[in-house]
Length: 425
Image 1: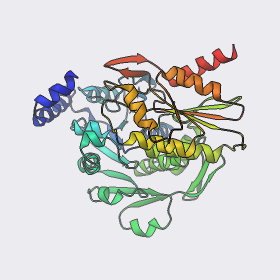
Image 2: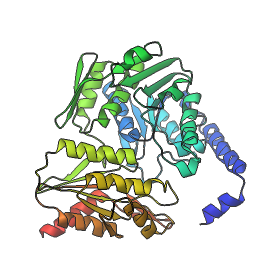
Image 3: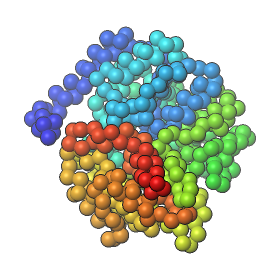
């Protein structure tokens, strides 16, 4: 509440000056480390974390020492720690310090997940990005930015400041906006062969062909076949982004293949926590587009008997964030799920029951409303029969729940295991 009051009293221009100054002084203090290391920034609405991990895996396979900063972890070479900050792109000099440490440890590359909120607060400033990647773009953080156009504009600022290499999703409907930003090299990835002629004069085209999912993904790029240990066709785009970055840096498709075929996925992203007698899958999906892709992937890849059910547990974030999408998430669940449990997620300073009611309003009265997330997960486990699938979304591997300024230790995956063990004892 105090934070919101301060924001109302202090002019926005002063906040912007504060954030800009912090970014400059941090870069100055640490000696502008990004001038001595190749920084790769990944932005977009969905898929950023997985894409950063894939790029890092490819670079390491190519023999490079890599720094990695994303919403899940911070990694420099072989040393890593979990990101407990609950921030995709930390501020107050954290990134400049990270880059300095990565540079001192001999990392040739740093791969950074870049959020629109981070860009809005100038956290990308004074970082010399060598490569910038756009995974995709759909409505998100609308209240914070004011409109989808301003959200897109924030993403665009990263491309505006990157002069070397732009890697773009050629199948995203917003690509033309990002193509307008100049760069020495542009790499466009796509699954659509009809795009080849359209983008031929723009830059290098990376086309995925012969895409199959049975249930794991396979596809070919320039005659090289990739067999991934991942499900969900959306991961083809994440892999293509990684391949595009690698090719822009002179790394071969053969090395990309070796790296990506070893990649086992990201914790809390389509992670199967329980396999028998029913499946329990935990995923981070917080946007309508991501949630629908999760449900589509599960229903198309796991063969259901007519008696089997898809049981969904989810909520929505508080703090005034994207209230518009709450009933939309409910509508998507109603479309795909047989049993719906709407529960608490990260209410911050909002009334969690109001958030639950707003989400449930989209389910046509189909939802069970359970405030306690542990109780919600336990209820789902008790409802499940052999062959059913439970999908728990919204938090992935996040290590806490945020309630009224407090971070309460939490992990959906651990709670699932604990409640499952209680059932069996």
